[in-house]
Each structure stands twice: as structure tokens, then as C-alpha cells.
Length: 535
Image 1 (cartoon, one colour):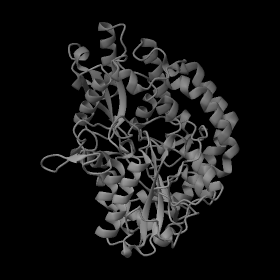
Image 2 (cartoon, helix red, strand yellow):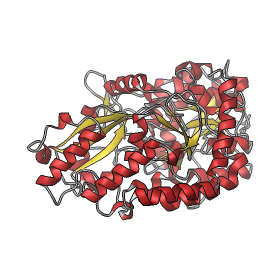
Image 3 (tube, one colour):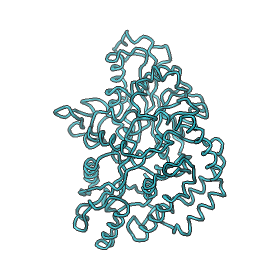
Image 4 (tube, rainbow, N blue to C red):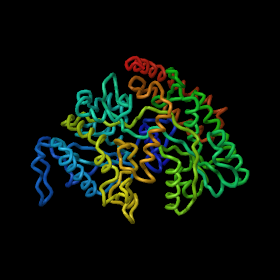
């Protein structure tokens, strides 16, 4: 997981055990990914050309009411194994039946395709550069694709085809896909703020200290010291590389792009690695690593946070989720049992993340043959409960069933997420409207959706929420800074080197690489953005 976190940074702060909700520290957003073979097409789900009827299944007749429906391709990037083609087609057919017969929409039908998120950006970039036909896509990375002309301007559709979607989004969220006053993409609506928690093993911790006294990093550090005295051979967190992120929230250091930030209510752009938050984070990481509080292998350990703590190798972990303590407790206990460790976990909240610009934005490719129909389908996905839930959970009676009082869904008897015919559950926080999904206990339950909304209401918003800088004018400097960050950031955030020695060296190397040029360019962009939107 540590290997793929860099790839997923731009999709940010969304991955977790339950539904992609974890956060990472700034790193190189230009991570190179392995090239994957082109996605296979299935005979069953071949999209029709515009104005052409899709072929009916053998022995069936296409409904006469469909007319010249446009087969609009939706590419769903997922973070788990892709379901079989036949199961994807079953879900596609059910959605299209609903669109036609329940919603009465006759001019658009969905052609559902899946893609692996790990190589999505690379493959889609090549497709778009080559002019391949696509419709609804995750814009990843958005600013680069918009600057390259890959994204359709959505302004003509905002008042009509996309009106319902815009009403769903909270204030200013549409700015996450805005460039120069026009909208080119719209964000998924999800639990964007995370509740950061320390997870621990009840059987070891409860006899040593009262976990409820752990409320922030300082009290957690005290607790780790007490536990180390009793269990000198154990470590009660996995990796300390999240500490810089948690320190950001103390003084509202808000990361802009990848390498810069603002602090508090100020809109002055600064070098992120020169902030007090980063300095505090790497100093604490070094202190904890020296004290033996965390995994001794550090950045060389290729196993994930999840694997190490659920297996019992580590006795605690820090993670961020948009879920309540009760849900996270149950989730960790269930996953630990599945791993054969059967650990009784507890957790306490140690911080709440600030709001940050939502980098998970979807738009319409410039090669779409009917962008108005694609906009209409986007609107349906973000506003229709059945369509949203079918895309994530699959079909009732096949991949889920309702509980007795029809208040939430669960897996059919004898099945789980790894054995149901269809699921895109690990994508529920990275696509569409998470708050529209059917409630599912131990994942996105109805109570958790309320928890997410309350968490976002509590969270601090920077003035530049929605702003994402373009690297167009500073590409050379960004490449050089990226190399420096790759050299220093990991060893500092994992506590492997003394920041008193290495941080000044890191900052000097950043200046040589051109970080100040990036700061100046982003400042000019932000100033113009603030003036344009009256912030």
C-alpha cells in the first residue's frame, strides 16, 4: 500500500480499510506508473455509435421507446479486483432499464466499463492524447488534462443537464473543477474531512493506561512512553509518516498543489517543507523512531499499515477515516478476524482534518460524441439513489440483501466483499455521491453518513478551498523539486534521519531546484483566483 499511496495522492486523502479514506503527506504528484495493456472490450457490452441502436440480447427485442439513445461510456476506476464482464453487464442492464422505464429518459443509456485506478492515469492520458473516444471520466490529473484541452467545458450544461448535480454539492465545491471562471469537472460528494484515530489492542493497553485520556499527539506520545516501559519489545504505532499531516491541522497549514501551502487565514503561499507544521512533524517522527515506538524497518518495510496491525505484528496504528469510532472498531475487529489474529481493537480520536480542495473530479472527455447526453447521465449518477447504489454495490439479491426492517443492506448469507459477484465498494468515497448510497452497516451506514456531514461541518475551511494551481509555467522547476523531495521527504517523515541536520540541507536543495519560482507562480495564480471569485 505504501507503494501505491504516491500514485493515489492526487485522489487524495481517500483510501482506507472501509472505503478509501486515509491521508498522506505531500509528495510527487507526477508519479510514474507501469504501463498496462489496453482494456479488453467485451462483445456483450460494446457501445453503439451515436444514432445507432445497440444490438438486443439474443432472443430479446430492444424496447421501442429507446429511440436514438446515446450509449454513454462511464469509466469507473476501482481499487479492488474488477468484476467479471458478465456481472458488469448485468448491472449495466439494470441501470439502463431504470433510466428508461423508471426515470423516463429515452436519449441516453450507460455503457459501464471498469479500470484499475493504479494505472488509470497513465492509460487514460495516452488514450486522450491519441483522440480515443471517451465520455465520463475521472480527471486525474485535472489541471494537466484541462490545460491539454482534454476536458469539455461544462458551462453550457450547468443550468439544464447538470442542474440537479450542482444542487447536491455544498457551496463552493464546484470550484474544485473550475479554471478561469469556467467549470470543466465536478467533484464526487464524499466525506472529505477525516477523523484521525489511534487504534490499539485492548488486551495490552487497558491495564496500562486509560485510552480515553489520549486526545491528541502530545497525549498519545505520553501513552506510547508508558506502553514502551511495560512492553519494551512492542511498538504501538506502525509508521510515523502521518505525523506531518496531523501537525498541519494544529495551525491550519493547508497544502496547495504539492509543494506549497498557506498557514491559517493567510493567503500567502509558502514552501510547505519550510513550515512549522512540517518541522514539528519530522521532529516528532524522529523522536518516536529513536524511542522505538514505531516499526523499526520504517520506509524499507513494504507491508502496509493495515497488514502489520491486523496481523498483530504492530500493536497499534494511526489512521484517518470518515467513519465513527463504533464503525472503525467493528471494521478492524472483523478484518483482524479475517486475517486470523482475532484482536479486540479499540480506537480514540486524536485529530480532525481540515477541509482541502477535492481532487476527485469527474468530467466529460473532449472526444465525447454527445457531451449533452453525457452531462445528463452524470446528473443521474449524482442524484439517483438506485443508480448510485447499483454502481457501488451491484444488484439486490445477487451482491446484497436488505435487512429485515429495510434500513440497511448486507451481504447475502455465505458471501462477503471478496466473494460477491459484483462490488466497487472500495470506490464509494472516490466516485459519485457517497451520501446517496444505501446504508451498509460496518461500511457507509446511515449513521456514518450523518457522522461525515457533522465532521465536515466542524472542519476548518481555507479561503482557497477549490483552488488547484497549474504547473504549466514551472514544469522544469516542479521536475527538479520532485527529485529533491523524493531524496529527502521519506527519510525525514519516517524518522530515519535527524531533522536538525537533514532539514536545513533539504530546504537548501529545494531552493536550488527552484521552489521559490513555484511559490511565486502559485501566489500569482491564487491572487487572481481570490479576486475572480471574491474570496
